[in-house]
Amino acid sequence: MDGLEKQSVICCPNCKNSFSDQSLPYELQLTIAEDLWMNHCEEMFRKGGRPRKLENLPSYIHTPRIKAYYEKLEKRIEARKERT
Ligand SMILES: [Zn+2]
Image (tube, rainbow, N blue to C red; front, side):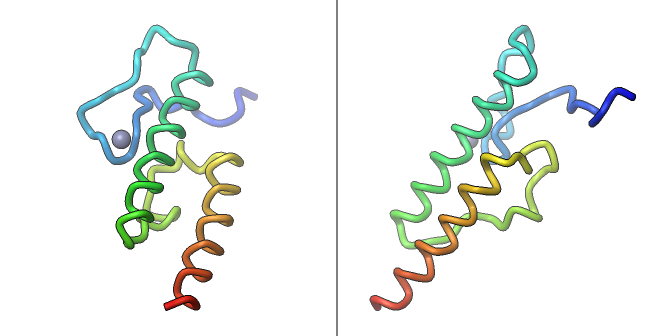
């Protein structure tokens, strides 16, 4: 068993053209993609928007770290709604 099939190209779901360095280990590429995507989410949140839903993102980004981030983000969005 090889486990999950690894995506050949890992990148931020938002920056279609900025692919990560293929010479880096897969896990590191994924971490970079997570960081980039969370930065976009923070940016969107600050501007009052909400990021794309997790289920609409490519499956490689459905990592425990991103799932935990989204849970917190949903709560922050809800909290903001209540204030306004
Ligand atoms: Zn990006």
